[in-house]
Figure 1 (tube, one colour):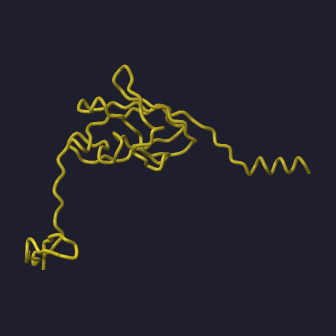
Figure 2 (tube, one colour; figure 1 turned 90 degrees about the vertical axis):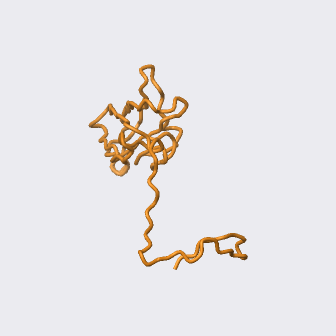
Figure 3 (cartoon, rainbow, N blue to C red; figure 1 turned 120 degrees about the vertical axis):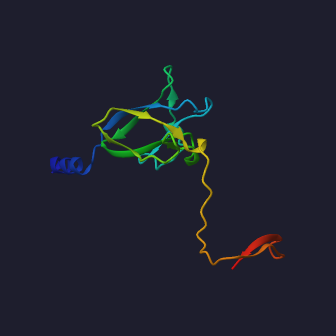
Length: 152
């Protein structure tokens, strides 16, 4: 009976071995020297400024972190602590998530080409149809103690 109970306990407990994944990141030359790089991904709820996932700058100028993860497929991106400073292409467009499978990969080399905040943002396009007209540019609303634009 004791053997059956132990066997049942062993079978219901799922043991997850931790595997080491080393991330080596090469950042662009315009990376501010005072900024810290972070890895945000499916393993930390996509937190772009999670201190345990801060990368360390190596003597070679790369950034490095060793992650302890259970076996599985993961996605991540490199940030400078916020989504406004996430990695991009060299012309400022977004990049796909980095995908990695643990333990199939033990070292991942990442080249960051640019940062989102290094490029001018395009002004948002209006979704108003062509028949929408500005009636008044500065309509005073006493209830709010401010002026608003009125469109019809």
